[in-house]
Amino acid sequence: MKVAVCINHVPDTETKIKVGADALSIDRTGVNYMMSPYDEIALEEGLRIREKFKGEVVAISLGSDQHKETLRKALAMGADKAVLLRDDSIRDSFAVAAGLAEELKVLNPDIVLFGKQSIDYDDAQVGTLVAELLGLPSVAVVVNIDIQDGKVVCEREIEGGHEVVETKLPAVFLAQKGLNDPRYPSLKGIMAAKSKPIEEKPAAAVEIRVETSQLRKPPAKNPGRILGSDKTAVPELIRLLHEEAKVI
View 1 (cartoon, rainbow, N blue to C red):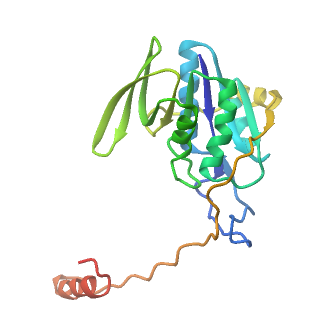
View 2 (view 1 turned 45 degrees about the vertical axis):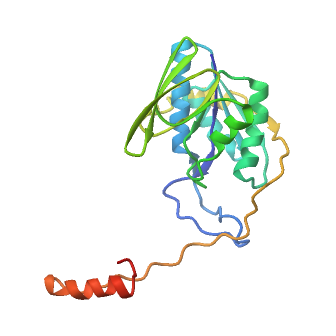
View 3 (view 1 turned 60 degrees about the vertical axis):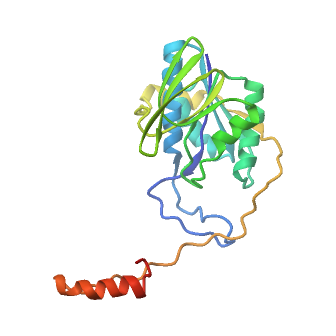
């Protein structure tokens, strides 16, 4: 069983983001980076599938040299191989998906795993775009994967409940929180990852379809107002909600 896991290198969730001087990218000064949390869940699932069915897990990331840090973590967690599709430019979701798809065509895995979304741009498009480009079935927001004789029964989280779907391999799956609890890299894994090679390839050239014209932080929220401490404040609250906030 060959499993490919596509992972992204993103700002730490506790990082306070500042807009860069060019107003087109973030200021990277002092920013800590990490593997996108949903991608970490996808990687853990890939490792569990390998443990059950044998085979190999290949971690793939598209981006700059900085992405090696996240690929090293993937190797430390237990991935067999790591591939960096090198591109220092800023790509839109389609261009990222197209670059990944070209590498996956060569790799020809049985299973492709993504996190349901990357926590930097949060557009939740890349995994399903890759599936479309490869002509493979995809199942998103997956919280359980059961593989039996080439058939896969998945439980996916939808609004108001869970849905059970069935598909066949090869296929693409997008991991949701609850699918598993990712393991911590062991000391042995961390030491071994330092000596494992990361294969570098130029990412396939793809036309950018979406251009960023400007980044800006949202305006600061207006300070709150205390109208009173008992029921006598209710009429004024209703008036303000109607005339100022215009929500009723």
